Length: 480
Image 1 (spheres, rainbow, N blue to C red):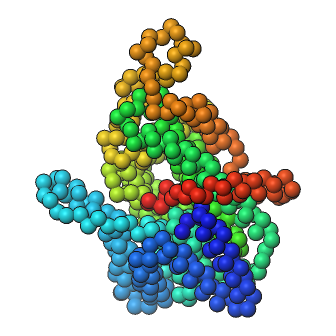
Image 2 (image 1 turned 90 degrees about the vertical axis):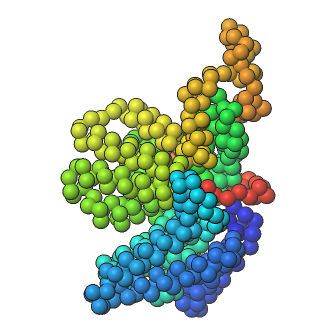
Image 3 (image 1 turned 30 degrees about the vertical axis):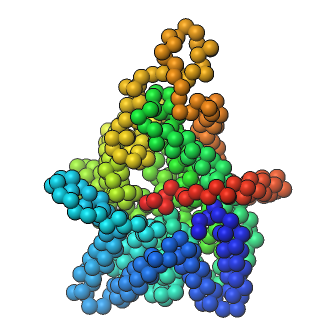
């Protein structure tokens, strides 16, 4: 079950929401239990076989966290923490990276070890990081004595479970104890529906449209030339933006329907003026996690400039590995690590760029790095980049030949996007204008003025989006 499906919007959500408030008026612990069961059902609906995995993970982490939070048996505390972290990382590594490891061993030593062909459990990257943070905070005595009900709900609350944000226990768990969370708040309902509608439209109305063109190009990388390679990569850059932005909006909107406020995870990243600014805007909760639980423990910026640069590079390398088991993700993380090191050095040296040049440089770097993020293999990524820089020839669409009679006939070819080139170019242009200049969803949500015009706008977005639900597609971050 996913947010952009009939069964979620018209069956699951109304039933869960209605019973949440109905039970909450009578007994808050029962309402929590109902929401926990509903969240587990939401998870199991995707693949029931992995429900025991998330339950076992929750129980083990809760037991370890409870021990660490009591500050007893000091000689055992650090070893128990290490065991807990190793358990979580080991579970994630087994399911996400084992086949990748075996593939590389086979290639390096010319062996033929069989792959396990493991299916990646849904959301394992997200709930693993969520629980590691909990264990570390328990070791630091920064957690409260949460009940298992509160802990389980904090980990599995369905709006954030599948693709984030990566929530911190202090941000979410206390809200489940507040009585006001179980009484209808019409302001939150209004905000929640509005941002959910915007997010749903971003996904089914915009991201899925660009997905068609991105998939066409990346499935025919050998045929790409200069123009259509840029069309392909811009399509993916916009698809990823609206897909992840849409999910983030929908997650926050759904949580608000239950009077739960979740952290912002996406804040107009393509408006960033440098790569550090980009990561303060893109997947904000992942950046916060890596900063708090990796960068700072490694020494942060407290041990000299060289060590600072190494620490910065490490967290982006880990980010690349976290996103996927493949050399393309490692290259992508390496690129962002190097860019972040250069950016920090540049700032500390006192250099600066004009605003337009800084924004252009940042956006183009992010855009080119997405090629490795999307390409199936390193070779495909190089092929696409060669086409983008004209190594496969600079050709023009046949349809433009009559407007450019002075150009030789062999410069014109039929491209993969020939049938929809005009629409695609217009769509890409409009999409870029939206991500560069339009207000983001959080800015719209915080506007105090809500009137009939806004209500009609939200209703139209919902109506259009619902008409597109027959073409259900997964969110891109489900793969990570």
